[in-house]
Image 1 (cartoon, rainbow, N blue to C red):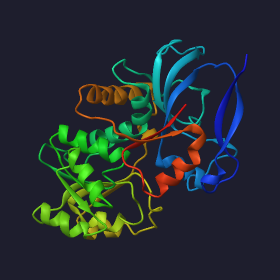
Image 2 (cartoon, one colour; image 1 turned 30 degrees about the vertical axis):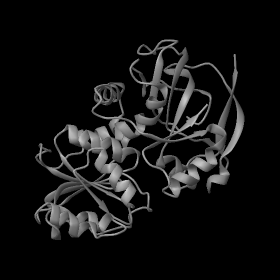
Image 3 (tube, rainbow, N blue to C red; image 1 turned 60 degrees about the vertical axis):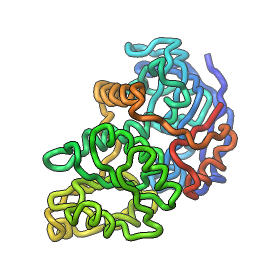
Image 4 (cartoon, rainbow, N blue to C red; image 1 turned 45 degrees about the vertical axis):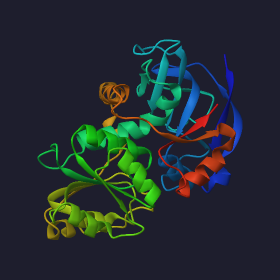
Amino acid sequence: MSHSSQAVQIRQHGGPEELHLVDVSVGEPGPGQIRIRHHAIGLNFIDVYQRSGLYPQNLPVQLGMEAAGVVEAVGEGVTHLQVGDRAAYASNPPGSYCERRVMPAMCVCKLPDAISFETGAAMMLKGLTAQYLLKKTQPQGGLQPGDFVLFHAAAGGVGLIASQWAKAMGLQLIGTAGSEEKCALALANGAAYAINYAAEDFVARVKQITGGAGVKVVYDSVGKDTFEKSLDCLRPFGLLASFGNASGPVPPFAPGVLGAKGSLYLTRATLFTHMATRESTQAMADDLFAVVASGQVKIHIGQRYPLAEVQQAHRDLEARKTTGCTILTL
């Protein structure tokens, strides 16, 4: 039996104008799959990279990496979900920009009753990203209360979650953002310091804040524009965790630079390496659900757009007009 669904597809890589709302047919889940009816859909920078072709896709492709809704059907071999369960996910392959879909069950998690569909849709990809960064992507010797970390784009979706979570861990998070308003938002969400990099040199400010020592780790989703300066913010043996390219990809560089700057470490991390098994996905989600349910981390939904207005949502995200999380509503 097939069900109809509205879905957003791209037929070629390019700008927001390539996002088309189409009717698709959705069938029954096969082994290891579920069918889910969405209540809310999350928007992420990775969607922009996949649309533009920075992360090339086999075309045509339905975009979207996260959503929340209700399980409508369960395929053979799926034991952690049942029909009628409230659920949320961040998952490959893309395809969440739709009313309903058939998808792999592995990365889909039961959503606790205390967490709304909108919050679930807004927080899975960004919250699990914050989780693996702060908890699993740590410098040599780990992170202890009182340690300084630098987090770029601290008023973005991942940044606001990370700022609150870092505070709960006792860390002193130094956030950067591109305006005074965004800096104020980061500070209100637990950042110990905020630097408006449009108005001041963040390297000099980081050195001042840390008494010349530098930070143990820099979490950088900006990419090209911040990469070299991020290295200059690190203390010896520090870690640069690169996890995005909002300003464009980092150009090739010589590893010898890491030696000259203090035997530094560099990693280019991605969420889905950490979510390679059902067990690791569930453990990370449990950690996220607990910190949100406790109130230590609040999920800020700064913008809502109907699914049909997805082009405008992408324009606003790329123009840095958004703060916190953005969702598509159905």
